[in-house]
Amino acid sequence: MKSPFHHELICWCCFIAILLQHVSSVNLPNNETVPAVFVFGDSLVDPGNNNYITTIVKCNFPPYGRDFQGGNPTGRFSNGVVPSDIIAEKFEVKKILPAYLDPKLQLQDLLTGVSFASGGSGYDPLTSKIMSVKSLSDQLEWFKEYKKKMEEAVGRKNMTLILSKSIYIVCIGSDDIANTYAQTPFRRVQYDIPAYTDFMASEASKFLQKLYGEGGRRIGVFNIPVIGCVPSQRTLNGGIFRECSNTSNNAAKLFNTKLYFNLKTLERNYSDAKFVYLDCYNPFLEIIQNPSKYGFNETEKGCCGTGNIEVGILCNRFSMNTCSNPSDYVFWDSYHPTEKAYYALSTLVLDNKIKDFF
Image 1 (cartoon, rainbow, N blue to C red):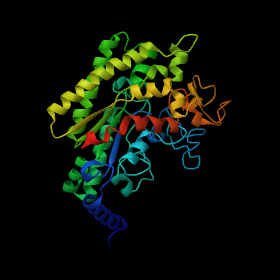
Image 2: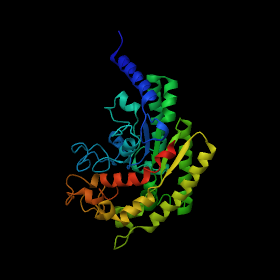
Image 3: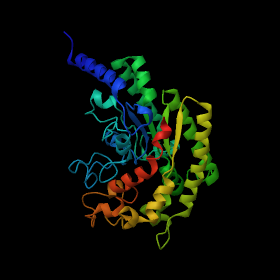
Image 4: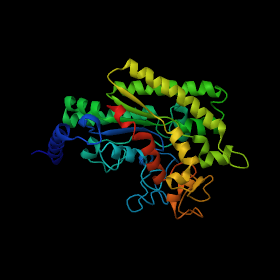
């Protein structure tokens, strides 16, 4: 007697066959197909993987998720969706990109992609160790585990085809500069900022080559945003007037330049792949400097609590003075944007870059 799981696999295989033959998007060039989206990174794109590991870097409690599917705190570091969800929607794959570790995942969820991101991670392996979260190497191991599940279900040939047509997004690096370098002494005794950003860029290239080796061909990499202007950096490093931290912003710009040239080199070396540089530094700075143009009026404080320092466990149901109007705010907590800001930023960053993946 065949098990229900066997029948589910048959249904899944049929679904894949239909998907690969017929799915196309009017918004994608040349009727290209995108069967799945896979995301690697940190808290900007973690939809809840940290819920299932031992770390204090969590947000699976109110007021996080206040505007997500009826007020559900899923572990997304925002009041609503995060960029991994928005990206999956922009590529017309699905509206919500689940966490790989979510125990409720179905085979169909796996088919169309997941996020492997872990909040608090970085290019620097030390960053994830300090925060007791999953490194990029750990996330790649999850992807390898994922591939085994897919191959078991649909066979190697279909798996290879799906992987080659899927979109891969890497969004990470802010915590290396804002936390590991700026807030701990460990790397500052080894590196100045130019050397540290060299190290980060080298780690980024190593990871991207490994991702290519695992089948990734359409790879988009976000640069580091204007990290010195997030509320917590203003509070910690911005002086009495809470100005943007030039040190952090300059480090981000230095890394971003190195990342850009490394991606160009990778694209020359791997001619069958696309390595797309996704600039969020300048669009995010544009939103912060011209908030009213995008419907915001508060750029220096987060919605949660005082908005100056609260993030993660410090942003909780007991946080006093949490705002009632997050759509007026660029930041939800002292480090992460609101859902509205994520949508505005994703539009500025991605809409003109989608064609570059094909």
